[in-house]
Image 1: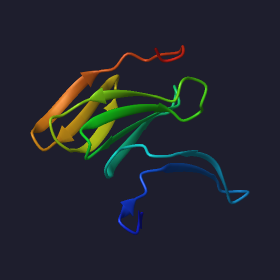
Image 2: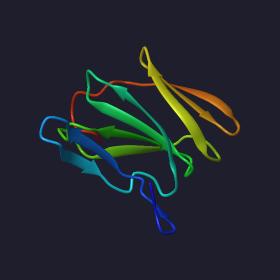
Image 3: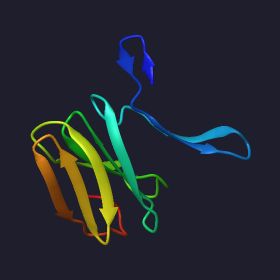
Amino acid sequence: ETVGDLQDTSIRRYNTVKMTVEVEMQAMHRNRLNAIDFQLEQHLLFSVGDDSFVKVWDYSFLREPHQVYIGHAKNINDVCFQNGRLWTAGSEGILVWNFKEQGEKFV
């Protein structure tokens, strides 16, 4: 969503029964947010954007807000979590990350 010259890089979780915003994570990335994926069992959201960061969010808010990884030298266009691995696709290629699930708070 673009407001004036600023892009809204927030993610909102809606309650579709009450038609309300339950949770909002603001300013997820410094630039455009390009893609997200989920790991449902651990309530994790993975996001990537034009700022070259991979961010890992706990969308249940049971742990610290997020972890940030510098994933690529330039923008990251897509992210996919599958079988314990995080795949990111950027302007210089595809990276595969081994992802250790965390049940405790992020450090």
